[in-house]
Each structure stands twice: as C-alpha cells, then as structure tokens.
Length: 170
Ligand SMILES: [Zn+2]
Image (tube, rainbow, N blue to C red; front, side, top):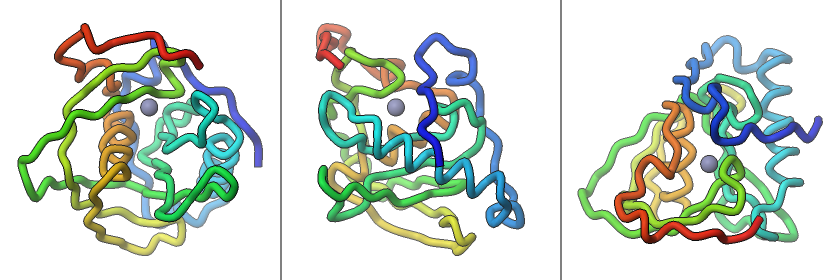
C-alpha cells in the first residue's frame, strides 16, 4: 500500500467521467492495489485535522468508478472505509438539506451546497459482491460528494450562494 498524492482542482482528471470497473477485473491485482492505495491515502491524509470522510479514485489520478466512504462507527482512532465500486444512486425523497463541504482536492476552501437527505446506493464491494443500502445522515452526504467526483463534478460547482464560501484552513 502507498499514500498517493491528491490531485487538486484545476487538474483535467478531476473533470473527466471515470470508467466503470468490469466485475471480473475487481479481484485483479491492479484494481485491488488502487483500492489499497485509496484506503492508505484516506487514512493518512487528514482533512482539517480530522479523518477524511471519503475519497474518489480520480483524486489519486485513477479514472475509475471507485469511491471510499467512512464506515458506520468509524472514528478518528480507528478509521475504516466502505469500498463502493460502480455506485449508482437513487433518491427516495426530494428532501434537500444544507451541507457544509470541503474536499482534499480544494484544500482550505469550504462552502454550502444542497444535498439529498437520504440516498439509496447500489454498488459492488471489493469482493465483487452486489450491495444495496439506504443511507441517511452525514454518510449520505459523503456518498453524493464522492459520486460526483466520478462524473467530473466538484462540490464548488453546486454552490448556489457564493457568499457561503470561506477559507477554512487545511
Ligand atoms: Zn471531494
């Protein structure tokens, strides 16, 4: 495993649509290594002094549809991540909430975006098992944020009131 450099806003790779991973490739060494590197990078790259809540493969320059989301019950001392491959999102309710966000790819910048309060996510885990999960709370926001990275979308694109933007340190 290796900690990889984080790709910053302005780089083309963060604006590309990432490629789906073929189910038969999930167990391959290169894909498992990308996942291991993502976990290592997320675990060892604190964001504003806190555990990083999630990471998308394009942020370590891998244009693949793989994201990490902080696991339920994960904490600063024992960070752990769920691996979501080829995630698909559905929104059971149209209810939106304000979410104050930042990103490892936009260090020092924070602001408010609208996110759905709950999300139904289908994905494959790193053993290529199909999973389906309804998520609410802060993990629902992390999933939406990380999913956007796979489509080349950054949280700053979704800021409707630019007065909510502020420099929040790194
Ligand atoms: Zn991000």
